[in-house]
Amino acid sequence: MAFSLDEAFGMHPQAVAVRSKRMQIIASNLANADTPGYQARDIDFRELLRNEQNSRIVRTHARHLGGNAINNTTGSELKYRVPLQPAQDGNTVEPQFEQAIFADNAIRFQASLMFLDGRIRSLSDAITGGLR
View (cartoon, rainbow, N blue to C red):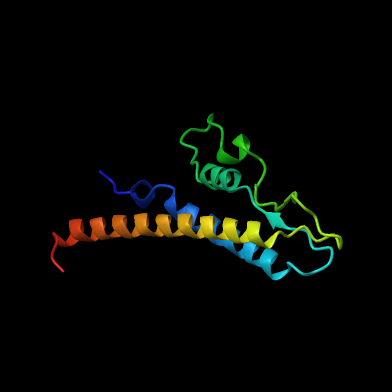
């Protein structure tokens, strides 16, 4: 029986990558909170993760549809956030909202890292027989 890291780790490596990208985008929004005309951006985490998973689909038969045929969009396009209270200067960044989203994303990022750490420790224990 072949061992697959994809099966062992599930979607969490892709989730960590997407969460990291989202943290960079939110940090950019926060850094430009006072820039006139700056438009807050974000990604749709679920859409991007779904596209990451679909890109890993492997064709096992010539008549099967490939991953790209299922969803032709990359999903990596940034979307503009609609503000609750836009500023007079056209800036759509709401710092308190961005900070809350950043904190939520950071917690979810940490949860995926903790899951991966646990899986790696389990695999390490299985390989070494629990001896360190």
